[in-house]
Structure formats: C-alpha cells, structure tokens
Image 1 (cartoon, rainbow, N blue to C red):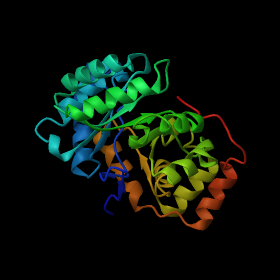
Image 2: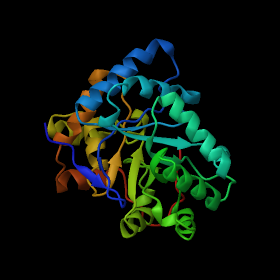
Image 3: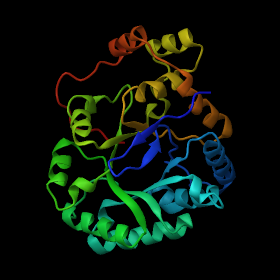
Image 4: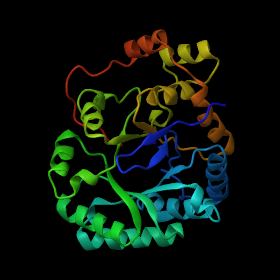
Length: 280
C-alpha cells in the first residue's frame, strides 16, 4: 500500500491528499455506529483529514466525527464549514463555537465559508482572523467560490490568508480546469475536490470501466486516482463502511498512464471555454 502523499498549504501545514468526507452522515441513528467505525478505520489507514460542516445532518455529521476522533484528536486534521447565512462577523464566531461543541474539540484546523452568501467577505474574514487569534481555528478557507469570487476575496484585508477552495470536481465536472485551477496554482491555494465520484453516477461509464478492468481495480478507484493526478489537489470521498474506506484508500495504488488519461478525456472532455462553477 502506497503512502498517502501530503499537500502543502500556504501557511506551512501539510495535509493528506486523500481524506474523508462526511456529507450525508449523521442523518440516521441506525447508521451512526458504522459511520464512526468507518471514519476511525480511515484514520488508521492514514486518511487523517476529515471534512464536515454544520449543514451536514443539521450538525449530526459533526457529532459523528466527534465520536470518531474522541481520544485521538491529535491524529486528525479537522475541517468544518460555516453556512453563508451565518457568516456575518458575529455569526461566524457563534457558528464555530457551536461546531466545536458538537465536535467535542477546542480547535478546528481549517474552517471554511461553505459558499458565498449575502454577508460581505470582509466581515467573514474578520471573524475568521478573530477565531485564529482566539485559538478556535488554525486557518480558514472557502468552498464553492468561482474565479471572480476568489479574485474579490484576495482583494480584501487578509484575504491572502485563504488556504483552500473546496469545489465540486470529478470526471464529469471538469470546468475548474479552464481557469479556476490555474488561478489556484498561481496563488498557491490548494483545491479540495468534493463528490469525486459524482455520488456514483459516473461509475458505469464504458471508458471508466475499461480503464478499471485494465488495472484490475474498480471504476471508483480509477475516478479517485484521476482527481489526485494533479499536484495541490485534495480529494475527500465519503465512505460509510469499513470496506468502502479500504476501497477508497486503495486508489493510491492506481497509476494512470497516458493511454488511460486519453481515453478518459475522450469520454469526459476537458473544458475548452470558461464555465460557471458547478455545485451540488
């Protein structure tokens, strides 16, 4: 099993390129124990970046994460998000404090604005900087921000402190490759891919299946390996069972060659012009 490569953030932190997502976790008491075990197994396999949000399960996912990391907080790089309608100066602080309670921790390593809302960037950034000063978060970033938004963000006081932009990215959602990814590379802002297998909807594609068969792996493992082919890209698939976690982890043993990539480009064409950023 290959080690998980790490991605440097512009504040000096290094995080695993392959992490764990929690979207749709915390919504069922019957599934909670399996979700906790899956996250814990992921940590044991080195997938120590865990992404969650106050929105997921109305805080339920954060509670699941809190149980999963109990007694092993120091092993984990913890990411959570504030909803845009909470992202005023005071509201961001209040939302973070509520997340800390649900997570049962004193500090979130990376706190993201979930998407852009009506509150000005300046107010949200001021709150993020305050939370850093208070030791409640280690760093901040954003999610679902397109190029124009990112350019505006960087014009704000302390806007250059942004560490990550978490975006929808997978074989069928490649728009960021045209302009947003080059901008992120230029500005040394890491990208974090959510829904890297498009919630399973792409897995029966003939080209993807053919690549998987050549390598003796699953289409999902090929799709995950494809998201990680670029430097500076973090991928956060969700897995609710131990077996699913193991399958995701094994994507790092897949090395896609030029023939593989060309076939996938034919089936999932890269963008030839700018597209609006997509969201799920």
